[in-house]
Amino acid sequence: DGGITQSPKYLFRKEGQNVTLSCEQNLNHDAMYWYRQDPGQGLRLIYYSQIVNDFQKGDIAEGYSVSREKKESFPLTVTSAQKNPTAFYLCASSFRELNTGELFFGEGSRLTVL
Amino acid sequence: KNEVEQSPQNLTAQEGEFITINCSYSVGISALHWLQQHPGGGIVSLFMLSSGKKKHGRLIATINIQEKHSSLHITASHPRDSAVYICAVRPVSGGGADGLTFGKGTHLIIQP
Image 1 (cartoon, rainbow over the protein chains, first blue to last red):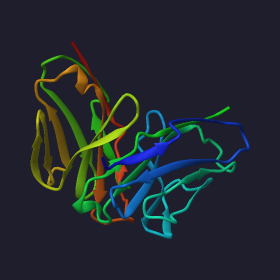
Image 2: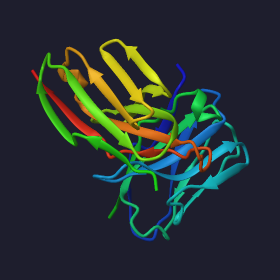
Image 3: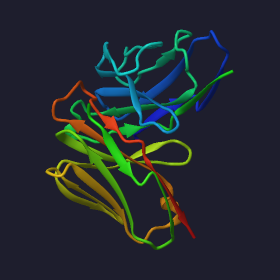
Image 4: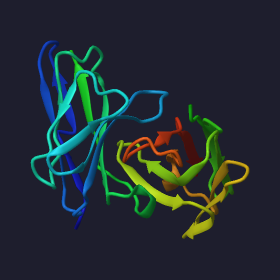
């Protein structure tokens, strides 16, 4: 079945460590997105990519990095520069034009900084 | 700045009741999404609307572009409908491939 797979589901990190969250999709979607969700707030866009080898900063990109070497994969690295990394992270994908297609989400990754 | 307001924030109802969740936004949009977030955190897309009304099973979504308002209705509600329902809009002015603004969600609990 087609879908989006995020891993790990839960992750604990010590302060000062970088961590990488995985996102893989087999929907043949061009566009992929990373969102952050905090309690009581709407989802906020971290980074997005419309095509392989290209990505753009979203609203809250500071302290994060991404790569898009393959169409299927869009990993997110939470660096030590991110001051408040504890959050729920969601990966999504769509065909390039959101107006013509749905947005598909993964199950999310919950990161806790100890 | 585009704002998306959902109401109510929290809703508890009895099984079988008719449920309405509202979404209002402040700018012209090209599309509106209704999403369902399960207790485990995963999100499922329910509807994408640009006008009129859509129906899928017991779920109905309507949008009034002139009034900048959308509603999500659930008929014959069931405990398995318990979830957070999120409204997201894409402004006409764009702002990137994403350009989505999300509401904070409505937490729905259906009691047996």
